[in-house]
Amino acid sequence: MFEIAELIKIAGVDKETVEKDYSFPKAYAFYIKLSRKPSLVWTKFFSEEFNRAQSSIIDIQVVGDRLRVVFTYSEDIQRHMQSVLQLVENTNNRAYEYNREVKRQEEIETAKQQQIGKERGDILRKLKEL
Image (cartoon, rainbow, N blue to C red; front, side):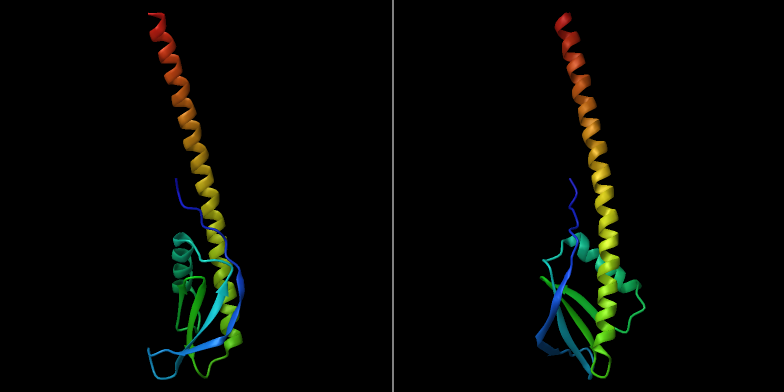
C-alpha cells in the first residue's frame, strides 16, 4: 500500500573523490557512502531534516547510494561529518515512526477487508436461504 522507508547507515567516506562545486568560489564537495540507495520517502525526510538543521554545510544531496556534501574549503570536515551523522540519525528516526504508522494503517485496512469478507459471506448465506 505505502512505500516503506528502509533505514540507512553510513558505510564510509569516499576518500578518493573531491569535486570543485561552482556554487561559489571556495565551494567543494565530497561524498559519503550509504548502506543502500535510499527510498524516495527517506530521501524526502532527509531533505526536510537538512532544511531544518542549523548546519554549516552549504548543501547536501542524495545521489544514488551516496550523499554529496558541499562545504567551504576552510571549514572543518570532521564537524561536517558529525552533522551528517546527526542528519541520518534524525532521518532514520522519522523513517522508523513513518514505518510504524504504515504498518498500523495496513493492519486497519486488513481488518476492514476481513470484516467486508465476513459481511459478504453472511449476505451470500442469507441469499442462499431465500
